[in-house]
Amino acid sequence: MDKFAKVDPAQAKPVPEALHKLFNDPSKVKVQPLPCEIPDVGSKAVHFEAGARTMPHRHAKGQHIIVTDGVGVVADEEHVHVVRPGDVISSPPGGWHWHGATPTTAMSHVTIEDPGLDLDVERGNWDEAYTPDLGR
Image (cartoon, rainbow, N blue to C red):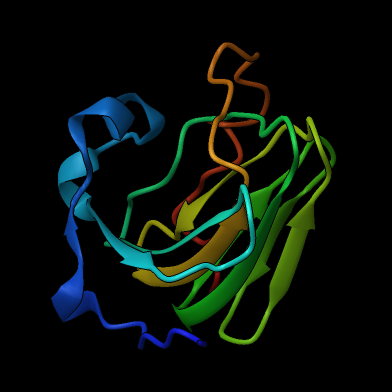
């Protein structure tokens, strides 16, 4: 039988301790588990307050992101991309990236991924590319 859920920040919980090092400020991020009946794949909604984002990381089997609310950023090895509701981002297996809210605007997205990530990566453009005018 199919399972249903609604992306709702009110149903989100604080970031689990095990994932704190994934975020620049875990206190500004909430996570909402979502049902996923696809074997070996997980899904969740992630709600970022303004200024919150992930640290650079890689997913061994890739990651699929669907922006549901707000204005955010997704950066890969070549660009920092401003994203809005309806945008779909597919990061390839092992692809270096970081993502989250802009400095001034909250953002929520749904992620579909094989659990597990690698934070032991170069920081790349993580600091210098995140400027206050992103998303304006």
